[in-house]
Image 1 (cartoon, rainbow, N blue to C red):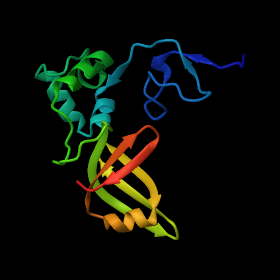
Image 2: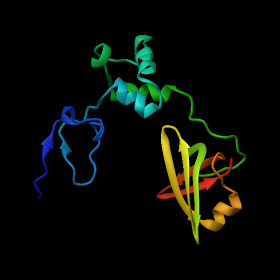
Image 3: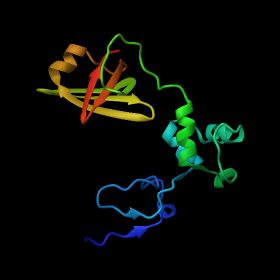
Image 4: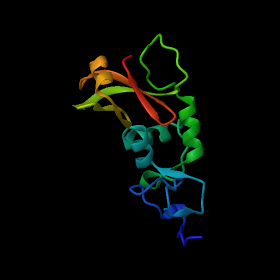
Length: 161
């Protein structure tokens, strides 16, 4: 077995990974209970740290500590997100088995030969899809268009709402 360093979740910095994630051959974490700082929650949800602090102060998001030392338990954050309404999705008559749909604004379309690269900004996500140039041309995709990235398994399908 390779010698992989064991670190405590509290030792990981946000710029590395959230404390519950272990990728590839990286460090193994001995603590699975996840807590987040208000700045981490803000970044994950695409809001300001002040907004997260207000949610905590209003009792909408349970937290421990005060000020910059405030933390939010991962379970409490998950419960808060479950209570929210569904993410924005453009109205559509389509019925599909794909459940991972990110609707946002097309920020980049690069066409070259047989392929096209399409980037969609669906805060807090940025989705990049490679498709045939023909598909991008048929959709007439251009920066500024509203589009949905529909993810099924390892494929990303871009469709117009």
